[in-house]
Length: 192
Image 1 (cartoon, helix red, strand yellow):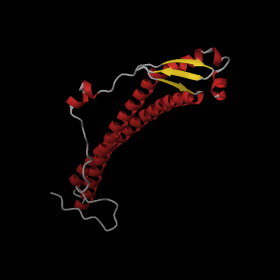
Image 2 (tube, helix red, strand yellow; image 1 turned 180 degrees about the vertical axis):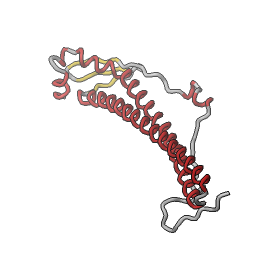
Image 3 (cartoon, helix red, strand yellow; image 1 turned 135 degrees about the vertical axis):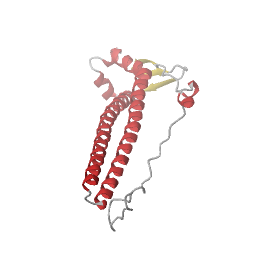
Image 4 (cartoon, helix red, strand yellow; image 1 turned 90 degrees about the horizontal axis):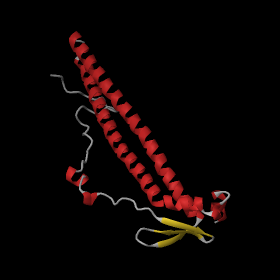
């Protein structure tokens, strides 16, 4: 058995066993798969364009007139959601790399502890290696948690982008197909 680890005053390394495990919340499968808990699928809006703006009618029959600037904002929201999803994907890859690196270093610590024990070098060095291994295990668990959360964010961004495209795609097509927006849609947007 190893002697208790004493941490020198002012040390940045907390004593072994004093760092709590990260809290995780997992929704029960009956909630995740319950059809009543799922969002409604997106319903496309219909749109027409005239000299007063873009007239949109929702599936529920509500009508509204959008300006060219508002339509531009809708396209920017869709683009931003897709860009955020791409950034999330890159971040999940980085989190996985960090988790793998921490696990590899923890394995190296195990090997080092075994070598030190076999040579009988010193209990203090073994204790410090055990603290380092515990910290690396916690880092790997935290990286896995971050990965899972970012992956959920990526899915949410992609869903938001796809839903906005499904709902508002008719508006963009109405603007693109309108004779009022020829020769270029940009002139239509800038004139509003």
